Length: 128
Image (cartoon, rainbow, N blue to C red; front, side, top):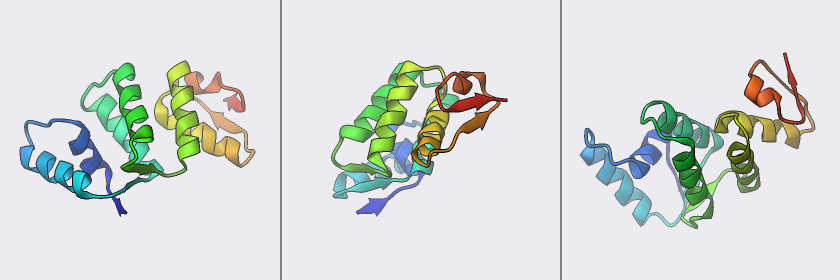
């Protein structure tokens, strides 16, 4: 198993015409690896980069996240939490990072306090 950082994962996902060498290297690496570990930080940063830098819409983000979950080459950290965060993201208005933060907080039976009104609508959160 290998682990990759956010920039490598983004190069696998996005055909970045400005960085064709990095895209090829990243895709070759992942293609030749048996398993690729995706930490929660990479999961969160990847969705942020895709949304903010590449202006990826929510439907496409969901497609990417679901592919990372079901593709046996990728091993997300805490896959069961990843799945629930994807489900929350699909159904709500909070971004994926906040959904994963909420799931992790719920896992340890902690109430999540937030200023974000979109996140505050979920159960087990308190809006400040």
